[in-house]
Image 1 (cartoon, rainbow, N blue to C red):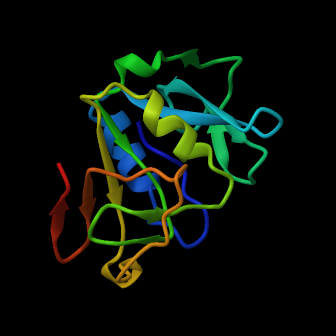
Image 2 (tube, one colour; image 1 turned 120 degrees about the vertical axis):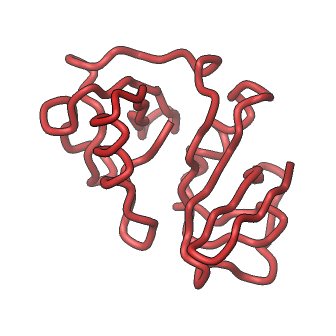
Length: 145
């Protein structure tokens, strides 16, 4: 599972395009603002399978993409704006990924790609906030598993 980045997040489009070109299974989220939920959908063609979503970024078109069950995801690339070394993250503030993470398989790895400058000493975590397992920056890899 990947994501289409918001401004301030690591640009995910090159990873998505390369993964599709290498015939990898690429799954992207579709956001439902009313239910504050995410549905995962398989994307086969970057140019034809995506359309503008409610958050102002491209997302899979449900008319051409197939739904993917959460238990089929083995690695989830989770976006965010700031992280700490414990795997705490600050997202967009809508809780989409905090609700998604606990629904993923316990064996699914939750990974974030960020710039080292996005690392902060401590993220103020609340009880509903969820951690990621691995953080990858341009300088290091931090494992929390």
